[in-house]
Image (spheres, rainbow, N blue to C red):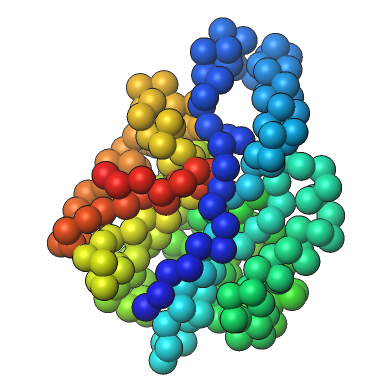
Length: 236
């Protein structure tokens, strides 16, 4: 099994402006203005709010090759049209997978920067999957019994939409990897669980993080890594 990062997300969604956001309140014009300012500054600095996408290669299994969260839609307005679709297909091609070869699209949640439904028509042999309990619109319930021993999927609510996360064993590195989606948006988000901005339901979000960490520990590998939805990976 091989895990290839197609792209790592960046910090558009991180709580690095949390003091200003908390001061502005929840769902207020002032908070919207802070987010708008943050987006404009970060786009100018090259952080367009992209999410993380991972390509999983494995021969001889009907679910693979597969991609986790193959979407190039982001905060940059130029990437909300056909450019995002072309970028996703080009990313597959540059990693040696044609659109017709892709078997599965694993989705963490239905936000457009993680799941672009337009791509399903461009991937003729790929089925869209998510954890059966998450009930993500546009995704089939993943048959957990069909997963290889080196993979698992968890229902991880709390972000504000149906949400699930995926764990893969990279045995060659003695490493368990969690593709956390926006359950963990960034390392800063992980370190601010006391006031997690990215959760519509903070209690459920924190419970999901605990469940994810427990599942990582249960893999019985030496190292454990979280790959956030909008940041570089970090060890836990």
